[in-house]
Length: 388
Ligand code: FA5
Ligand code: MG
Image (tube, rainbow, N blue to C red; front, side, top):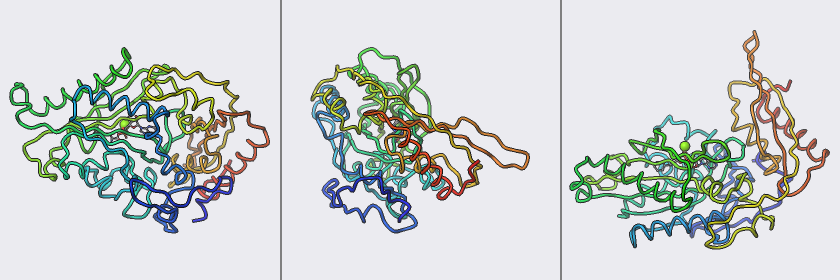
């Protein structure tokens, strides 16, 4: 629909091949009220940064493969070309995501139609690969999420899923129960991976919740003076194994955020850089080279613009970010809520500070003013809020 088209963006290829499936623009962006895929997202399909040996994401993928090949020779089957268009069943039902879970909403996930989505995690492939009989596997791919705008979040990013299934022989001799055995093995495996990639690095485990694992954990690494979440993992819910015919097994699973790990590994300060074609970025990386630290090219100044409005019940930050990205694309560096209050009449006002910055050049005042003017206009017309 017209709301999703953007005259500022250059035309993109109209037929792509994704995991052996031919996909046309009209297969992804439909004139259908259930479709919320914008141009900016369509243009990222088929880019496959994880399959480029000279790109930091590809270099990292290969380094993780190397760790698994060394630690578990010939064990893990690898998939890196599965189609990112999956069914709602694959993305959610098969991994036990409850019917009312937020991640299913149009606010969080890109829907092609009521039955299909751009996968929001590589976990979308777990159940099928288990059903096909795989017991040790790694799945790497691009994943898609409506999300906030800042230096560590991007609406397209890359994950690597890992799954390992154990049989009774594995844990029986250990003297601990199957779940604890799997949980310990999982943490050892991922700590070993972190050590392989980073050497000494400050990290910590956090208990968390996922519908598909129990217990569940997240690993955080200290980076740029903050704890950065780099992966989620846990012991697979028995129901998932049961459905794939494995009633006497336990398994672990993890999902790594490859950009986050690559940011730490190569010292890349902003997640937008992964999409840059600027030679000053791309020429700094080469195949198989893990030890490289990115040397930032001169940072151009940011420009901040504030926008204030009275929100309504349907307002969400993800919708605002989608509007901003639709207009400014990668020039939008951050969208930050800086003021939030409710008046006596019960009306709530939000003020957001938008940081515009190009990583490649100086932006002119005119250019930024035009972007901001368009943002103001579309925030009113698309989000139905009242500007202040
Ligand atoms: C998941 O996606 C789970 N499927 C991971 C998992 C797999 C858990 C198997 C258990 C078993 P989460 O939503 O936390 O979890 O995302 C995983 C990682 O992706 C995060 O830790 C983070 O590193 C990365 N990530 C999440 N959102 C973004 C984003 N917008 N931009 C960049 N990286 C992101
Ligand atoms: Mg998480």
